[in-house]
Length: 117
Image (cartoon, rainbow, N blue to C red; front, side, top):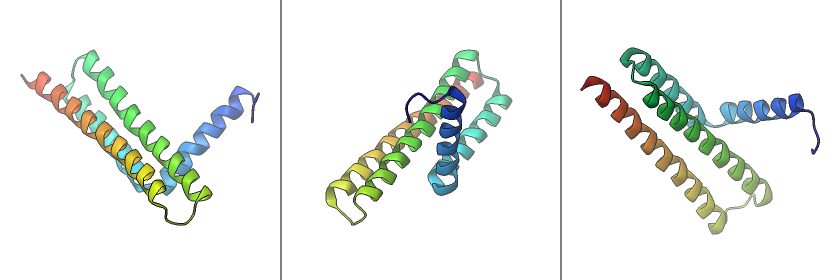
């Protein structure tokens, strides 16, 4: 799929996000939590640097979920049977998403604490 026009590449990317949103509950959960965090931040009104950090964290968590889904989908396609190595890869990717989510939650907490102090 090389040398596609930008509009086609954009459509493909949106299709990937749509696929992940419709098939992965965790992606929907993280999208909801990111949206709720944005609402809280609209109420708390942190400084621009906290906005930048939180939007970056939300984007990184969603990107990690997309990468996790991509690798899981590929692994399931290439090796549909249970395999310990495939299980390890899936667990590692889930761990990556968990670490990113915890970091994002801590940054959000710090943003709120900074604003309230």
